[in-house]
Image 1 (cartoon, helix red, strand yellow):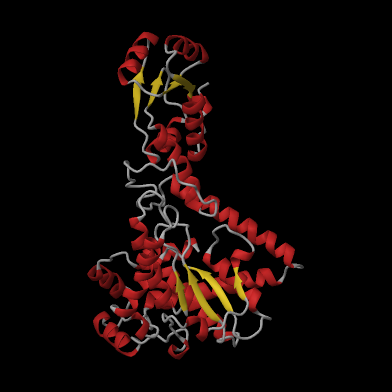
Image 2 (cartoon, helix red, strand yellow; image 1 turned 120 degrees about the horizontal axis):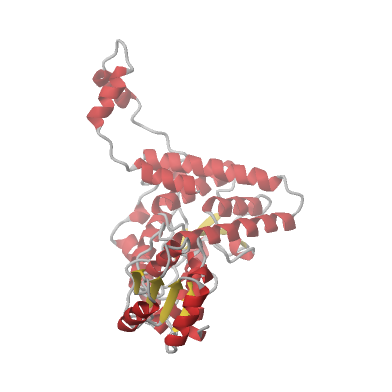
Length: 410
């Protein structure tokens, strides 16, 4: 799926059209690029949709339970609470419904990536059509994966775009968790979140349009790629001997995906507003009960501990920069911990004066054990650590070490 996400971004990269035309013309002998483009565009502008428009249904009314009787519901949640790649989830659902009865339902998680989510639901519709299972209702469910604990108002925007992607993709029904689910989870949160669907139904008229992105080059190609990816996983699953082996494979893939996403968050290669960038400094997370099913929960559990301590860190250099230093500084930046890095000290007394002036909660020494021991004796009111205690690649391990040093000392 990561290659599909990269493809989405690459489709929006701007190009210098005139430069492209010059390069293209150089490859042609007797044809004029302008006349050739006009001919091609006029004759091939229509792209066939991957599924028939008539297969798309929408249901926002309160009679949903009557329209789609609640028979057996198939869901990846029966196997794991971990977040999984979207193509893997769909492949598992297809595996589960192959021999299912008529008029049943599948619960599908909405992907946070807007365009990929649209492709996901269109792909499901296409696959069900190929299997002759148009009777199955597709229920789209929001997840906790990309939701913020500290800035819950950001969740309203995320829920709105998620609902739009599921509706445009052709889901039969959309279920949204309350925007403040991880905090108050009260009646007000339920009402405001329900209003998202009401607004999309009553004011945007999305429920009155079938397959609105029919013919879109980006979406059609993403849908086709998604279908191919699901088919490849299905083939892999079908070759396994038992359901237990399949479950083990799924759990491993989901756990690997979770670790990958958490690493991207903590390295800030993946940025989510209110989670790992532009965090609300005034908002305390100390009293929040973290839900272990959320990928972001691990990030914000650490963030809650850091916010509760509100620390300052001083890095005292006595030698050349350590190989661990860059990863440590990235960890401090990721969790918005104020810090100061010294130039290279020659005398311990100079370091002592600089540290007292900055008045940190944790002093990290980049020097030998003798210097560390001397500073510990001189700075009895401070927690002291050595740079060697930190990891040269893991932001998570570094933050855990910082928290331990701040809470219990050495």
